[in-house]
Image (cartoon, rainbow, N blue to C red; front, top):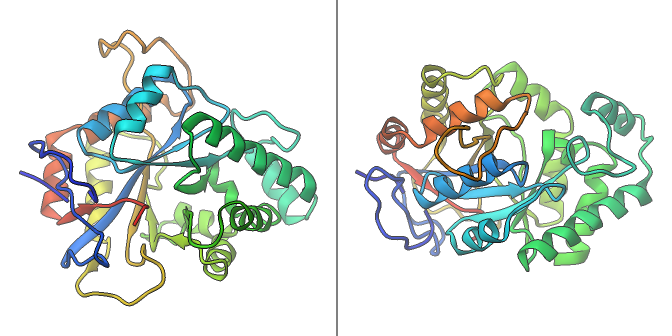
Length: 308
């Protein structure tokens, strides 16, 4: 049983079937979905979850927090896996800088245009430098911790720097156009989502079509099964060859936040604290389950990547 990734990895039973997207996404009548794990680097539990899920072809991308840590073994393993790695730009979490604030305060400061542009540019370049020093290459894509990449002032500095450093068409970005019409998704989108999408379009930065994975982090296996069923069945299908300069057009991005449970038998997973840790561990169990793989097969999911 399989579902569909853009590289020719060996078949794994009950794993998402991989698909070659190299010819204008000609794999028709499939739902092209990027499943991205946020917060790589936050803890060994998150890092190991990314590795296990990628090895089992349950995810196709992950975004790294430069304030975090990867062991040498984790880094070597990640670089050998068929997943895309991007920058999880962070001003509200573990990266310490003069611009680091709680989310509510950062939102207010950005909308009042009280964020210093030179400081913002410095922090953006610092995080990009640290990403490149860690992985040996530029990020394949960029997103933001708590979606701060789309806030006023920050988004303009970010697009200017991305184009200056990498040129047009050489990096992709998360946009938050809602896949489903729930309140939380619309709040995220209204906090700069449309303006960020326009900036990406104007600067020829490829971006996903719609965005899912938003919920209240009050997780159970049953709730996650219902949520993923809803997200996947409403992800658009590619039914014909679409002429577009954005190779990610009609692609759904679903974020997730799994972590390997403490007591899983992995010696690298030591007790740690995080405000959504129970949800993270539940998400990992769901994504590794046969029920998740079968759901992807049922909805004709082609597990896709940011890279063309």
